[in-house]
Image (cartoon, rainbow, N blue to C red):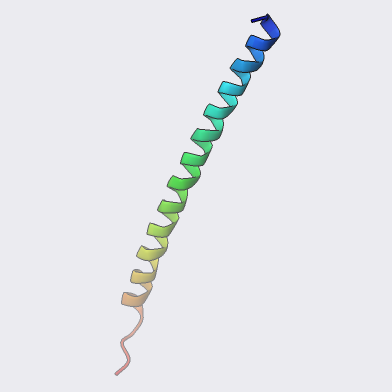
Length: 52
């Protein structure tokens, strides 16, 4: 394998790794946002006065 082909393969591997990590971070952020929204909704509900 010549040097340019090898470098291209390494760059592609690095890009795939970065892409994978980015997707994982996005998934984790979505989970965190969902949890925050759920917690926030519960806090708002408990803070509102109860109407009879």
